[in-house]
Image 1 (cartoon, rainbow, N blue to C red):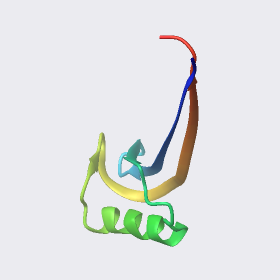
Image 2 (cartoon, rainbow, N blue to C red):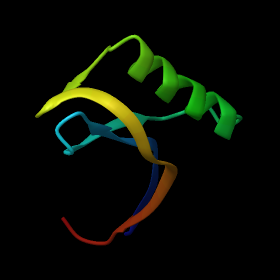
Image 3 (tube, helix red, strand yellow):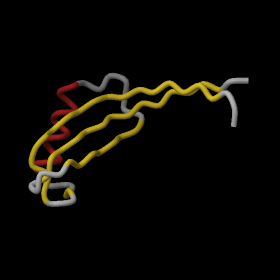
Length: 76
């Protein structure tokens, strides 16, 4: 018997001062999360220097998406 599940997460991609990309994934975002809330969170991460990339501080936003995946598991 098949098992079905759904996974949802926010993926935020930043560029660091050395030009490398840095990705943050946050699982199970609230259903009413808005674009402005995501972009504001990204600005806060950059402005407060919360994370550091491989080659330096995070300096710009590259991409932000809410990704939802449906999984049908038929056999283990």
